[in-house]
Length: 307
Image (tube, rainbow, N blue to C red; front, top):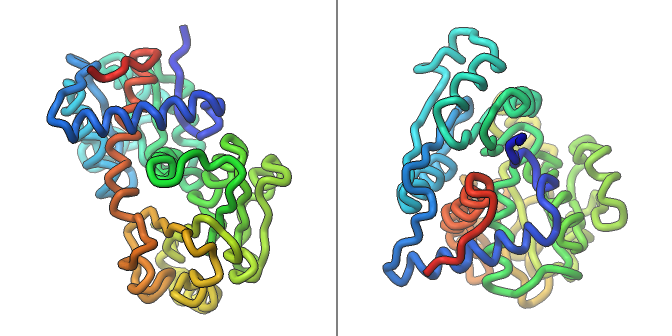
């Protein structure tokens, strides 16, 4: 039987997405109570990092340990991937020795090629196109604080990047309204946007995007691999900082999210990210719990309620 991969949020259906969120919340509560939930004893994850990370590595490695399994870190510097071994060959070999593979890389085609030749589930830890694991954590955070997001209004402010694409896919699955406030020339992928229909739309005025929003989300202006564009992007995004004045246009009860790391004074003001509407630290922690639910779902083919 072919393994179940998680390369995009769209690899889940809406019911499975909500089940993962509910399970992540339950697993989190179990851990906080001091009890163990170890459905992956003896299981091994290979973590391939072609892009650096803090949250992704710590959350997956800690999560596997907490579930009774083990995670191993691989980078191009200490594997044959960095010496030109074909992705197909690497996938066949590594997947014959482990139970699940997480990859954080650049081009989305690389992870698709790896998954096509892997005999075990492959998880997208981030590509230039998508960052679905972050959306699991983001939605867990929202559900914990506000309940179901169906019918709510979310404002994305900034670049139409991999995070924006994953927010578009989340809007499709969970049935909320997404307003994307971005400068001209920095819109999200047209095909991804079009597939969301009326659930996602682009506006070039950040104030229009945020007005009345229940949730405001942003990300850095220059992602990894775009550092040479930093000065150009600072000019293009100068009017797109999420500051106190912009947040004041959102609903009074609105929350603020950022996938981190953040650049205070650029895409977000210190007053917003460190303010009372910000839930970025809960959001960051939830990478651990949401990914534990995901790995259990993929490796075991289902979810076992924690005792």
